[in-house]
Length: 256
Image (cartoon, rainbow, N blue to C red; front, side, top):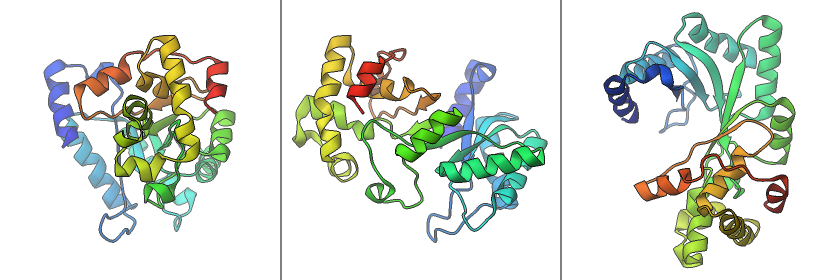
């Protein structure tokens, strides 16, 4: 697994203390969809990650999906076991709505417990929905969610931030370059209309379009980390070619 590879790399480089190590667990059963959010499954997932990574503690551990049949008080009590046992430093919510995160954190504050300190949801310049992604348990950024994150300043770790390479592929090769997944998940009229604007900013700034797409997220008012994916080295180089790029308010407005 990826954690085994990362664990070997950490051991060979001795860089554990220079990095923030994050993992997640308690994803619903992939066959039945049944919730796995319980103490036994949680501890099993966390200990497996610790063992594979070769570390004593995770900096962030995400509860990977919500379980709406459980109260937020139950879930905070459960995840605080990891804090109390010093297995995890911070708890994150992965694919939780802002409404549930807010309720959980209100209860945690009142109970003297540790709440969620970071959230992971799908967010890209190219908008999508759980229906388009084919996953009703996913949470995508929208206007309501964005307003809450801007107000609370809760950090967001955005997954699928490049929308499967929609803009880079569209700018380089037109509609013919888009595969079926991109077309079904991200190729809306609104998203496609943004491609010329991304291209214009990339040209003016002298950067790759992929860098502009990531900078759209990292230039937001709330702290945002873009989880850039790549299947080839050149894609990673393009994404990181201007990692410190900051878009202006005018540029952000043109992409909204």
